[in-house]
Length: 185
Image (cartoon, rainbow, N blue to C red; front, side, top):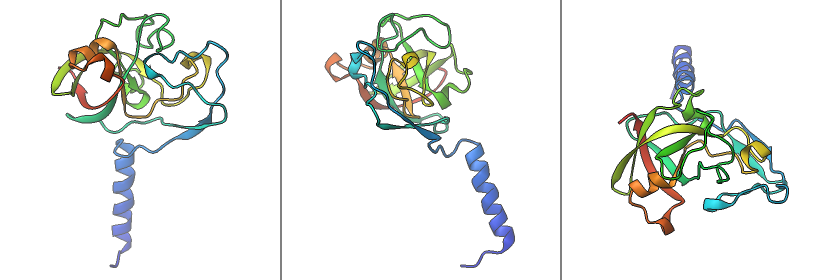
């Protein structure tokens, strides 16, 4: 197959446009894990604590958002003392586990543009609307601010127990589930 220079230029343009529009999300780097100080990493809800020396992948982007954005739903407590760590990024508050709230991976939070907005999550044959209140940081982790947990993957919707309950997932099965989501109701 032969390519002329105009075909090559068009191909480079299309590839760079796709990347600029978020159609491809490659890792942005790696961080090396640090051992958490004693009693500093809360393993509630099967949260992973950083491991000394392990390399963790970081992302500044997330897959593109559509009407059926594929994601991994994880379980998180947004309460004071919960495994979510500190107060929520969007409103500087803690939230009850009985409230339908979520944290989104860094790229999906979109520089806080989705803060305090709702998303609809579909999974387990059901649908639920939840408020975005926090970031599941994909760019950094293994530090005090992130409760010595690794960076999130770039496709995470980290949800309160109330979201899991609304999706009809039994408590013993909560923690990780493939879902789709979209903005609004």
